[in-house]
Length: 159
Image 1 (cartoon, one colour):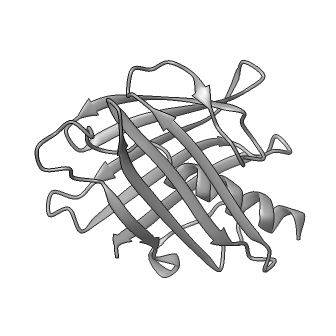
Image 2: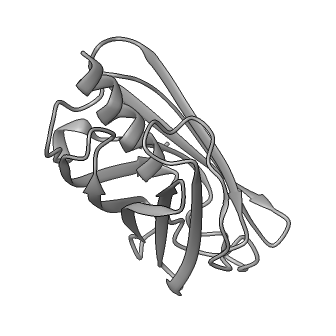
């Protein structure tokens, strides 16, 4: 049960991860509310959460990312961070594996987020928004709160 909650929180953190486009861009791609498609997502280790919703809102020169969900164990989870895509560490609230995150833009649709716990990198999340703006994927590599290898592929669809 603790593993299920940990995986949901990791997924939430991942979802809030690397938003694909700048809040300053004209088309605002990647902003809005997104729902995890559990059937299309892959969790290693599992199990997957029962539900997960991610919301991205413009904030200053960046984005405010929040997630809410229900873990495989039926318990609610949430996470939050605000970043300017400048690669600087910002607080990450609600994550069981990290206490800060930093996000940098790779291109208009791709960002990389680096999560750290007490200064040590624990996960790297790559978020890619589809060209049609109707979905995004998050590839998560790293370790769980227990130090086990983690390799997730999450698929979100615009609500």
